[in-house]
Length: 223
Image (tube, rainbow, N blue to C red; front, side):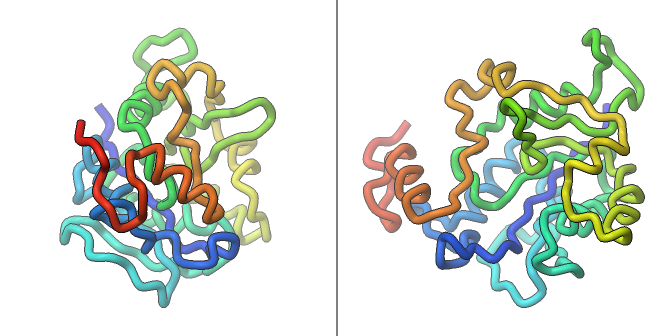
């Protein structure tokens, strides 16, 4: 079984939100704390890497969680992925990648994506048959809800050196399994794992769906 890790990207500009999404209150947590906690139900905390901008303030996290600073700030997710995988290369073999603004992330989806990088196209156990598993919704790929082998780091660095910033180019360079989001409804019926909080409206909608009436309140009903 491959060593599983995770990379959480949180160094974006948050221009449409108007404030740092990592620091948004979500019940009795902040957004990044919540996403780290959810990911930590699948991946050991010591193999979770948070990628932040150089001067970005972060909420208090477990001391086991690793924090790295993006050496290519605001150059897009491919640069953030490079920073995260560079930290992960001696820790993990396969890495789940997400952003910090998915408070409704479903742990079962993470587990499912990990399972798909360990099998071949017929569902049999395989040894490095693919380097990437990435969901697709029609023509739109989700590189920030995907699983990567850490060995793709060299290719990412080469693409960035060529001036490439689009994660899609990576999928053309390394063996990738592209799976439909419809397949993922078996583990995340509403596909909430893909609900990024890009605007205040997105944020308030997610709060309501999680059972919160205001950003500083606990859920109205416990599970």
